[in-house]
Amino acid sequence: MKKLFLFICLTFLTSGFAQNIPYTILISFDGFRWDYTNRGLTPNIELLKNEGVSSLSLQPVFPSKTFPNHYSIITGQYPQNHGIIANFFENPITGEKYSLGDTNAVRNPYWYWGEAFWETAERQGIKCASYFWPGSEVELDYRRPTYYEKYDHVRPYSTRIDGIINWLSLPFEKRPKFITLYFDAADTYGHRFGPNSKEIDFTIASLDSLIGNLVINLKKIEMYDSTNIILVSDHGMTEISKERFIDIDKILEGYNYKVDGNGPMVFINSENKEITQLYDFLKASEKNFKVYLKDEIPNHFKFSQNYLFGDIIMIADMGWSIMTNKDLENWGKYFNKGNHGYDNHHLDMHGYFIANGPSFKKNYKTGTLLNIDIYPLLCDIYKLTPKSNIDGKADRINFILKED
Image (cartoon, rainbow, N blue to C red; front, side, top):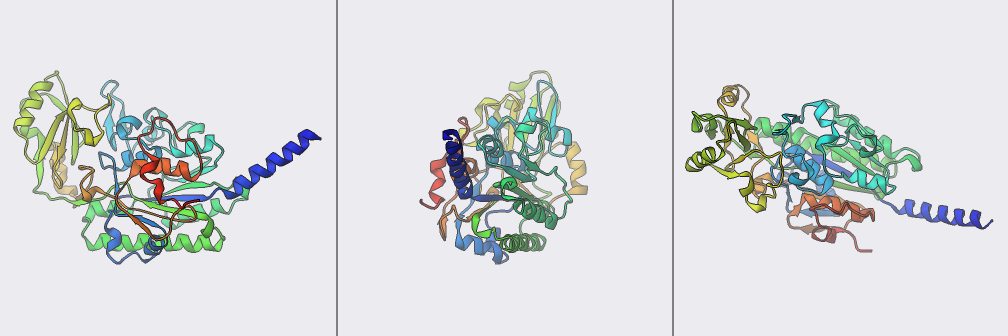
């Protein structure tokens, strides 16, 4: 009888706790620059902004690229610590390659050293779901959310929203409490046409309408008032030009080397250990770019302590592009007008952050936030113990939460 009484009490307490746990949808608009909401094209986002929390900008980690930043947002770690150091890179020891377009690599847990928030949450009893996010489809059951979708670039955006609503319409005990959602359009059209084009303005307005659609559907299933909506982006975008390029093969003519990457940032490895000579020659030719040995990268980049890095790193000045001869051959055919990956402290590289819902203050505006602090923020919302080795800090961001 005593055991039965204790079981009933425990069940009641657990049920009460579960009832009070908020729902949260973390939505990424890839490449949505910090100032895109200032163009008068986003009435639905403005409503969330005015009723909740908004920051001046969201600072990405370096390099300001898609996969490194999405994984930093969800793990609270810098790329040097979580392992996803670029969209495309090679392990210099094994020769294995990581590419965001390679399904096998993207799903291989070998590359992902961080603990994603859904791993932390599921281990502590919070059911999670992901409608796309880097790291969410790794081929280890215990490292994935309970529900997840394998990335499909052409999946209609309306279908993605329907998927979220379907998850939130499940019976209470099966319903995920935390969900990620991803859209690429601002990045895709920002690259293709540039951040100041009429095409990107149309894209901004279209993405805003998605938020309006999501809110309408949340209200239909009576989940809007109990759901946090967090809008983020992984990085910004800047204009580039065909005339602003650095021909690395021309600079290093006569040397043996290997270039990993192109555009804003590249690694250079010496084919016959001429590291000092390569570095000295590049340093003497330093114009429209900066060059560093792996262990001399400035501390503010938080990008130096990882064996995956090349011997030398070149970082282009804002709007410039580092290219090999092969890259330049293709550049004329497939030239894009916008890019990112540059110094993460430059405002053009910053994304945006807006949060609305029962966990957040109302009509609260703040300065720039760091995207590595989102993971500990989520842990605070759900009263979870965060992974101990994160770089993010709750006390830099949790002041935006509603006081109990």
